[in-house]
Length: 453
Image (cartoon, rainbow, N blue to C red):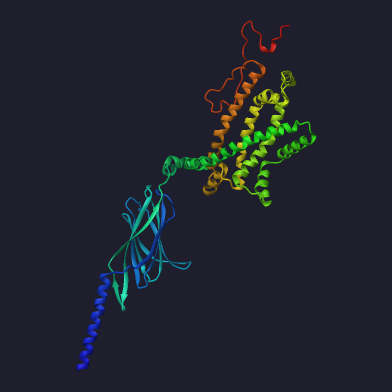
């Protein structure tokens, strides 16, 4: 009897210890999720975003439900989710129910997420506010544990997981606002308009292509002065009295002018580097443009110099000038004035040719437009790029026309008729219609004037 009583007492004491342990475990819950982190599929706010929450359940705990609480100002009204457990690269779908309530997405798992599982929850179509910064998700859950086979439901545990994103730039905000406008949507529904003139992409492409445009301008700003110097030197070589010098200049000019610039780019960027001649892409591009343009400018300068009447040389010689002085002070100034319109046209052509460097990966204007088109499947970026080219070429085309008029004044000694421009035309400076000027009474037209005979 005494032994039986002792056994009963020992059993009761063990049970009391077990219950006390379970009570203490419930009163002081352990963290059941470890390694928690959250990522976003967007870098800026103000647009539908996918949030991915990943954590590992404790080896002694299973999770029956989780509440994902978003910060104030986050729109989760259209949020949806999916849940998987990860076993290496294998994904196991988890049945879950729930949905958004205010700024919290409640998720209940059936069955519970087992212990020692890698849990991944993806919440879609959450719209964060535009203002970027550091935020935190509030993760609330109740873990189920067991002590000596006795199931224990812990008290609710709340954790915070931090994340951050950037504030969108102004053009992104405007583009997203245009996305929501019915008039813009109707405009884009017309295929010809939506494919080439999509307002949202116009707003986005303008700032994205701006630096590519500046890069193209910088290439020309460095290459064209070098081409002028090289072209002038080649022009003098072609007019040299030494046959070998003339042959060298003629061979250079004929080879460069007789081959496409696209081929010359590939020779410089691929052929020279295979041969061991390596420089930066930018310097190589400047070199190719200068080499190409100098051949064309050489012929322009040569024709301009030879167009000056020989009497100019004779007059300079009669004043005691040497050949070099005659060129420097008499011939070259007149040549520059005559070839300036043609040089401007060459500048325009060379600027447009910078688009060819997109083929070798230089981030100029056309390269940026190609990337946008590849990412969006829309051709609007090409139209924006065309606008950037026209910003430079249209004023220069008008300048060429004005230079030609001034050259006519200096060559013929009289003012040509004032051109009549079409009122209100955007390209009025490019197309001119000349009206005959009626002679003043008692005065003969210039064409009929004689030299006193």
